[in-house]
Image (tube, rainbow, N blue to C red; front, side, top):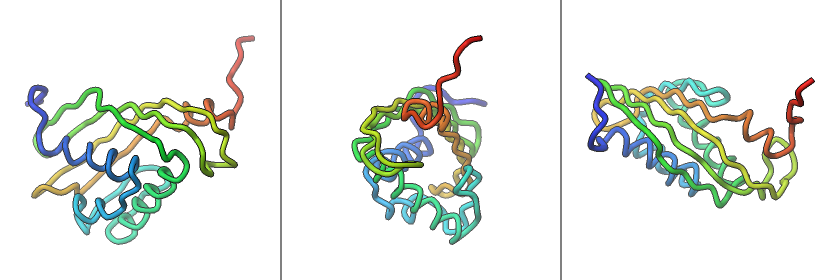
Length: 147
């Protein structure tokens, strides 16, 4: 059964990871909200256990440094058994290094997060930020033009 009415605790975990972790740069949130045996599948952060925890913390630091004014809004979510899906919109200004020198440009992008939660902690995670949209908005790649 898919739940889509009241926001469950599992959704709150993902919200806190986005708001407190990536937007505020608080890496300590990973130790609080994730299992020490975390299985991480996100591109660039994948790993298990201590390796995954370290990569997620570094990812948070890198994102917060690149976009210190980053904010997230949760758009949609659903939960089935121990799996939760969240669609969030992120907005911020690139004032720190992110795949190149700071551009000062604003970005707006979508993130899809899927997590398996057990005993109040994230035990497995798949994250899909729209990196293509970010790169286009920063001018790191050219906007495709119709022929």
